[in-house]
Length: 279
Image (tube, rainbow, N blue to C red; front, top):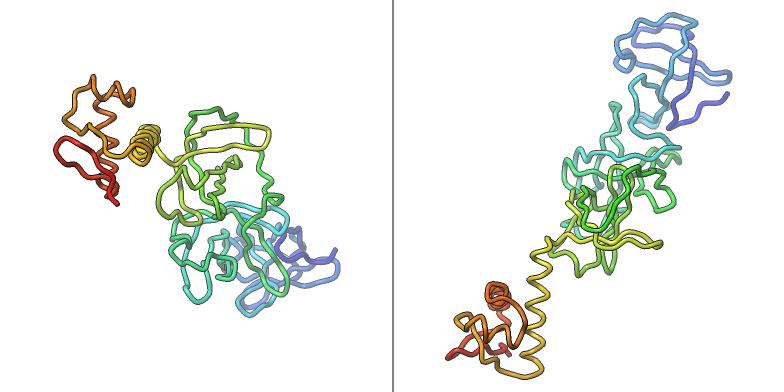
């Protein structure tokens, strides 16, 4: 059996050295440092389950610590450190951290993950060990929880696209959030509370906006559309509930909230009991 970097293999202890042990497979020898032996006392002939990795000098080494992912099994890893010139380093459960290169991160560093964020990655081994963001086909998680509309679920931003975000729950739910269903920037690995809005055979859609905010935006857009189409509106925040109801079929409270939002956005102004579009 030849050794496989990035995998856990059963190896035999061949001998002890001054600073560790030499482990063997049928064809190869691998060094296990005392620091990687979990303080176990090993003897020649013992069999151990060792994870094989490349050390900082590119040499094959072994550890008895449990790696959170392998070359065959992707996983969520915590962001441990940020290096603007290199990328982000992820905690993979052993003494060596795993680099996700800046080449695989957004050009806008505001969208980079922060320490403590989680990324679902694969372990890529080719001359060195690095992380890659898992593609849709790489995600092997099988969710047990069945979601339905209006459910809330904790997810992590997995991909940032041109028209929205792809998020992933720890169980493996893949949820798409259209750009109209969130505000501001959201970085890779950021934890989000997602509201499920729609489920079909094509997937799950969600929102990062609280339902009361969705209603606020809908009401504001209704008022804005009226102003664009008909011009000045003979209503303002002091108008009676009856007058508001005649035009928009919404409560005075909802009307005032929507007007306040439009005013903060500098889209409307008020003059002599009228609401006017800011041009």
